Length: 558
Image (cartoon, rainbow, N blue to C red; front, side, top):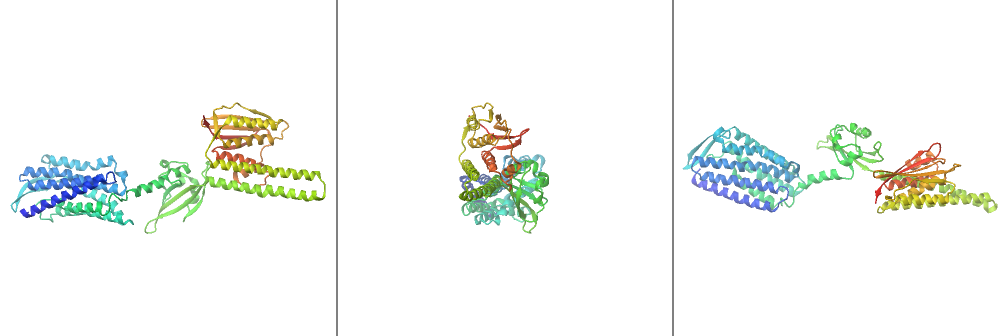
């Protein structure tokens, strides 16, 4: 190189440093935006390489020139590492930007820096070095060694890996992201291309690597991305995190199946619905995870159905959609599980209410009308009694309806708690006064036990029904209370006639069965009230006759 060429070379290098420093200061102001710190490191590496090249050109002795080449490896090794992690943070792949990944990628640059300082011992980085006189200028000629090509290949590999996320954004529907990604790619490819041309000796630079000159183009590109395209004002980093967050935190269960129906992803809600864990399910066929999913694995198109997990009192609406690539090839399916347990329970309750009003009230009304017509022409005490009984039945049903509506209303309001001993003892006292022939007993109850106020209605109905419908010659009702960790069990045992299966079926399944005197309405009040309050109730036969009603309620101690 001539003296004029060398001067121009150094001026461009100085401008490169100025542009890089400016970009670094702008990026510094944007901390802690994703990608800001790696970009600062990248620009610092460019400045270091450019500065050491200036000192190398000015040096006249072999040892001095070798020193500045060896020192330059610090910046040379930093640039591709910083570029990779800038790209990953910018595109939202922050799971790969942890300390362990950063340290792993710095291993090769660190080794290179050490080999550069100790090259005279092993000659792995450069085989030989010599001063060359060309156009009155003294330049350094060095023959690359084995490790030089290793670190060169490593540098290009990191550059390519860092470019991949940006290539994905070139076609983004967001114009700002397209501009940012294209500008950033120009910034990395400019020095990359220049370096490749230099390595193949296509630049007459007398052994001086012109790559830092291309950093001037990179610096301008990065400045354009920072200013014109608002690099840290608007960036795509949240996109991947938002999609992952939506998938993992959505209220519905969601699982992804590949084309062979293997579970490849699922959120916690789906794992709960299938009564498994992601650790046990991922990679397994869906039939192994949940055999009850068989009807949906054989579908050929989008499908919706209802899934009821075995042994779980829940129901889910199942939606299925296919995942296809640009060539319309089936890649897999996304299955969402929307819990509809409450919806089905509400539907069941409406069916019971509808059945009661359709059957019981209509029947009683027809009896009243028929007897009223007869009484209009005949004076019959029997018919009058029938009218009175049916009217009282309608009144009883009306009272139960009001009680059920009160339970529904309480279930929508803020939860309140009441002393369990007060509920049970007052109800037993009332039953003893109203049904003195029934022998009623109660076990002692801890006064520090509290339950949801809805259990006031539930317990009252259970105990009163046990006494009211007990036709045994020696009627008995026993009430016992046991605590089990955070749950309390209230057991009411009677020796009456028991509960008909069809009445229990109507309450538990909502099936169309005949009702007798609205008794299932009282059962509905007990079952629904317990369910709304977060508990459960079971009905068992007592020996030789009667019913055992067990209410399990969440316990709150005060």
